Length: 510
Image (cartoon, rainbow, N blue to C red; front, side, top):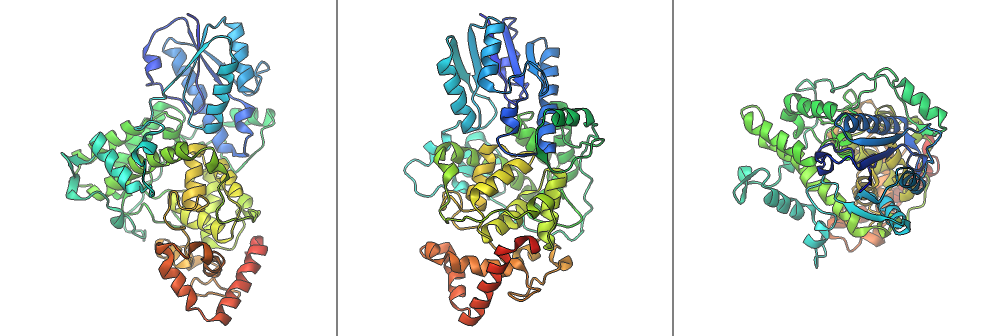
């Protein structure tokens, strides 16, 4: 039987069972499409990374003896539309059965179901064989429960997959070392330079421009640093274990103006494109830890495992549990627009300047920069979650909707009303000062609440609490802050609110 098997751009898993077969009647199909580059405006490095990784994957598949068809973005025969592409290949190659791996994005899942319903041949969907969990495992786990606590899910995953366990007991007799993972980085230990590959990407960037794809952000044409093959991805994993793991947990929440990556692995793109699986990443890291326990403490490793086995699987489960309605959630009724400096990086706020310019330069920022700097600011200034979603989805190299949307709309913007977070992740400038050196070099004074030199985060924080106090009055975790709000002198609160509204109306001046 002649079969056509579709491979999406984030399904670059050469270890999938499909490729362990030798079937001369099977053709694999990959394509770079305007359908995928244009649904939001993407960072140039993100488009380059996916196109290069797809091309490398195609070369590997061919080298391993499989039949494959590949459409580059500028190919004249490329219809730039998934349904037209599949139909054309079915006709050209006399295909009798169409197969695909389950997509991780709701829109593609629906599109492929529609395409298959219109086909006149047999079709079948297969698991991507990537995640620890099935799409609906989290829904089943929390069935009948009101609170969807990640910690409970994480512990069940640890038990089920026997990760960092001594029988039924967690290693170290402690499930979570989060309290040990909050150190401010003060240069105590040197940070090794990130693992880079110095790839020349001028040709592929020229193709992207020729195709008319509109992108944003910066790129070094001679030194593209991200891994774009399984081999390179494995190198980054090995480098993380050898050079960064021993200090990862300590400083995973830290920020520093001179250090873009600190001890973070930079494996998220390799994992989200499926060049690496979460299981092999965790097995590699935990094996390295157990072989080097004299140098690496358990808290470093548990913090890393929690991000992948806990948070990553949890976020995916939330996405499939809540879609499609999740994409419209905006319980706080925020309506403002993103300021222009999100596209230029030009702002006098040191923390925002560093986080946004790093995002524009590297297509990457770590989770605290995304949550407690950029996300904190967009929530305090009451930006519409659609605007925030589109920016996060476009700017970050690892952003695919299943992982981006719950993290942004839920965890960061509280637009889901507490499905993920039990309280909004907002703070004044004090948290940023506690976790970074940004405030010491800032135009604004982190200790002032209002006035020309006051840290905008301080003014915006108390204004946000006042604006949303009716919504949060029944939230126990917000009780202490709302009580502090009540104690602010009415005259002082008025000044705070006047200043906050001035900031919101003139964000590009700050």
